[in-house]
Length: 147
Image (cartoon, rainbow, N blue to C red):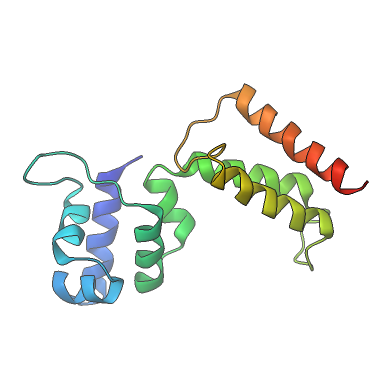
């Protein structure tokens, strides 16, 4: 997690777009104070680091046309991404784009269920043991779906 790098990226992109803090915050859909704090990487009142939520990163990604994965990685959500990539790679039959198979659809739904159930949390560092347990849960769910 490198919030200063994120702040620099946001400020650079805003300036490239020739936007004031207020105009940029309107475009994104957040307050100008929050955007300013994100660019500074901390709350000036408390000095505490300011880490954006996933929803805020999605808004920024859409407004600034920055890849969401890049923003998530810089913001410390890489573990969540790696978990999803592991699941995606496990169930993809080929590296080419194709219509999702039944197994892939089940895997995507199961990942969402795990997130909703609190088994996967954005930004969480997964131990090898937990990663293996989640993998086994996904495999078992697919086996059961074949019955």
